[in-house]
Image 1 (cartoon, rainbow, N blue to C red):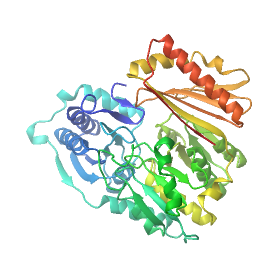
Image 2 (cartoon, helix red, strand yellow):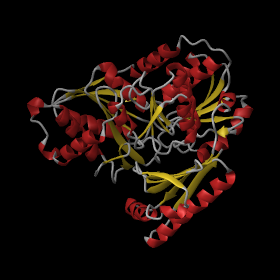
Image 3 (cartoon, helix red, strand yellow):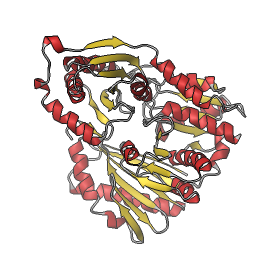
Image 4 (cartoon, rainbow, N blue to C red):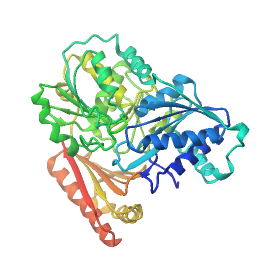
Length: 469
């Protein structure tokens, strides 16, 4: 598609994401839903978000619908608001974890579910026809300002967990990356009885506290704060608070798979079995927990797991690294809810996270980004790299071609190569039981990418690798 990628529309302002494009998206969405629809609009803390929000609202009105302006909200609160207010759709202005210069738009349906690819395709078709969609003066829509949605969102989260009695004193650092979760997660955790130290919780579109993606290399410089403040957890969001990363004193940055495995263990301990939907980069710790309870694992594309929820409404958990959808709460990714849910699990188990992680199977792992100057270069290199998969070695159990190419080996190690849908990067992921096998796979993966780069006459701008155990 021309505009929509892995997670809505996202790119650099104003070269790709512009006020003109935002207007056309609003107009197309209004036409798609038919005039007289209520469409919610909210935005994150980026410097261009208010401008783009007013632009998309103008497009909504030009198409004959009513724009409800909700103010700055975390992305999950916007998703929640659509269902809560009975609106036809919602648009959040955010570029999530991307650099400050970027921005984007993400659309949610009447249930609070992010638009599927088929719906995004229809919006794209209408964007291309947007010059013909403007209604005459006597049919344009209107706008209204709706205050208080964040409080309603937090109140409903609190009511979900208010019956769980705090069984231990939790002392937690919450880092909101100067994003739109700043007035959400610290508030709900305090209400649940947690002692909260807030960091980077003043909204600022320049993200002065840290880069908005809560990766290990971004967060580990803050790890010493845990001992300084005698805290048991460091909870970190991205710019719009749909993601959550966690550090602990003993284990440092927790691989997101271990958190997903903890959620799966909690859900399956109650239900005993069920379906769990995950992305291709989820590792073996989750599969081991699922196998223990005879749960079915369903694999689908990163950023599009909600599409499988439509096919499997009985799923008990939907998760990819960083992100969690709890169908009992709603069909949207929610880092604020995830923070409260994690606290409730610790209360129920009467142990801190460092001890709970010891119950989860662990592996050596790496997640890497190889950056290029353009999406074209990235795509050229990727198309060559996936033809060299055999260089990773023999003893292949199977190859999964869902959102990239994942090679599973007989020793339970695996490698995944995929082209980013939002940035000009090739991403690679790998996991192994032993340190020696891990190093071997990492070296071979990097060799394949570098050879493919040379073959396509591209140039690597940067390589970032996060790894751990």
